[in-house]
Length: 404
Image 1 (cartoon, rainbow, N blue to C red):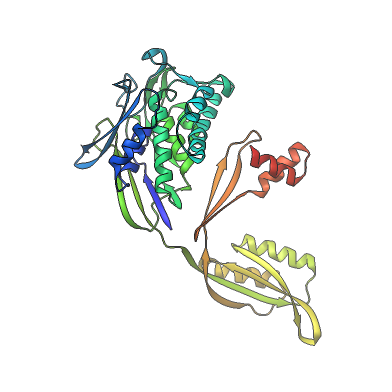
Image 2 (image 1 turned 180 degrees about the vertical axis):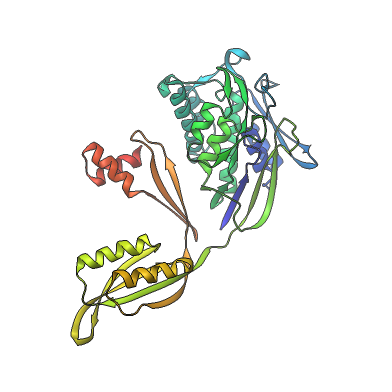
């Protein structure tokens, strides 16, 4: 399975992600030329090599009308790359969601890439709306609404479509610490919009003073991550380093790795017994207790037993470490005198759970990937909750959440 791993131990920003992903391409220079033919108003992309703590990587610069946007002013302690003060402070216009949509619709891009760009901006708009207590339609993007931010988001969305990983795994995100000055004044790190976007995402701070993860970086990670976690076991074929503008004792970069991960297999215990003298209620209770003991699956099968009696085979699947607890539950909660055991090899999809903000509250979505397939399914309990709250059917609630 083609897997992309993003190491965000020094945070993430749009320019760093662009530069890191660019290094994975066989011909990065041609891709930069493609970016410069898009016609983003007043924008020019420049990529160059730079060195941080002895590591050589790519630094991405976006010029707007020939000028590079300056970093967020007045580092409260230290500052990282990429975040900018826009609007009145720098003399640049900032835009609302409607203007962003108009700019993106004018670009010569595929519908899929346009959707990715607008979905990323949608995450930022929702965060800004929540932080400022104003409708999305009234939100103006001070830090992420000018052409350099449009350029960063567009570049990353194009690169992800170019690379086309089957799975994108993102490390826990280092957000930094301290304070940062932006268009609204002095704010804590992570900035409120960044913190909102990263809700439910493994993140940490405190090791470096300054803003390491920007709202743009957070939204790009949130949109493209299949899951967050440690680096999977993978055979790495390409490595890219995207450098930030500031210097620290650590190499200020996003590192990306592209390679293959084996399809997942594991070993599982199958424990089963046949019973013909238990009621349906007793069997149902026994199933509940087997789950409580750690079974990953419990099921029943109707069977024929001695003396032509109809019976039930009760079967539980569990890990080797839970085997003894499951065996005890079998003997405690069923009438069996013996439990059969088989050790099975299981081929499985990689599974993760995403938390999705909706107008009806946060819902969980289970994502399964592997063997060339990706499946998504909303959590039953969350659908049922919305159905109860709205007084509608389960099917209607599921359709409502899928549209949200």
